[in-house]
Image (tube, rainbow, N blue to C red; front, side, top):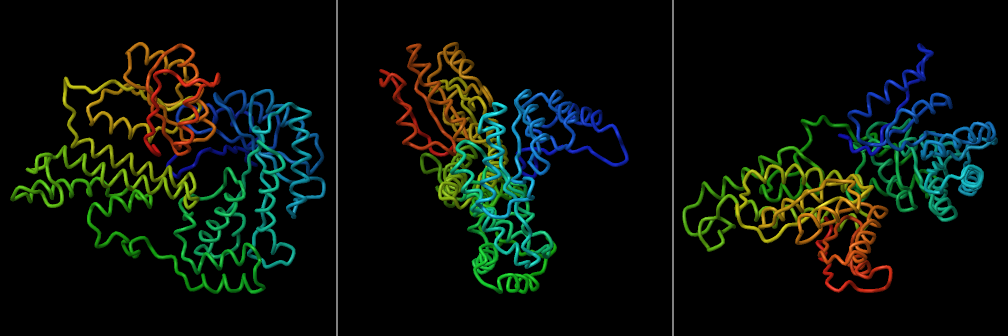
Length: 488
């Protein structure tokens, strides 16, 4: 979705209408035609929940259940989740109210886990625990440690209940603070929660900054408040942001001022800004072609030291500007400086940039170095990296058959056999979906098929690639070659 969301919460309960069930059915049916992210069904009524689960074509996430009034309601929700293969957000609330300490959060989570897994047969991975947080804006002594307890609660739940996931309404932490103060506090809180094991968050992605990009002074103020490191933490935090004005977009200084177009492209990919990438590419290529007066073209030359063609310049931009920028994004992701939503936003900028760059790329007809079958593996909907690889291969002399995303292993293997592929390329963004890759390797080995395989994705590294070279029977396929192409 445009704002970077990976799920869409649906709530249709309004006081003016008594037909919540029918309204839910209509809304879900309408959304299924144009929304490709999972739906989060948000209702307090079990009958409405069942209507939504019956109507939705894919797997849903139920928002949410707890034990505030005992387990009767939770039993109904877990029963429906089991029946319709849904996942459930579980709040750490019991008959005593919201759990405030990390130990209490774990205690309630264990109780809910026992009901869901042992009584209703759900899997641990079907459960998403939200251990809740409170605003730090009041300075109430009862809640000054609430952020710290929430972070520790996430860590304890993930450690003691293997397989479950964790979620959090991060922005609740800053409720009541000045608008200009909330993004920094939410961003720092999100960073520490992710370090503790958080899998998903309710947050305005447009207002969140990567931890490493937050001003060091503001970062320290936020951490003093979050971890209750000093008695005057809230006072100092408020005083600092009282002097920070929310500037209109037109008055914000352009951070790319003075940069070359190559530097601007790199910056925009790294900092997730789509606007103007086409103009930057046009400027680079136009400048190099139009100002040519000798045997060299500014910083670029053709393949034989003469005038560079637009195609050659486009390939140079791809190899020396765009790919290094995405490599830096990947390195920051690997170092924990960027979380996944930011990586995806950078990839969207890359996608837009490459799409325009393709206008300058020329593919030689009738000449081919080979035929590659590409696919994003089953269960994974992320295809930006795969599409980039397709562009690189296509413009370096290869024919490419792109099977798309969420492609079953059998479809990939069948197509490779049908076209006698030179190689198979597999892409996966997530750790969970990358497990499809060794399955495909093993199946190819079982059928005695010797296609070389390229693997790539944010979770892929050389160690993984070398490990999946060896099949389940411990053998090394006789003609296997595994080509690791970095973080595609």
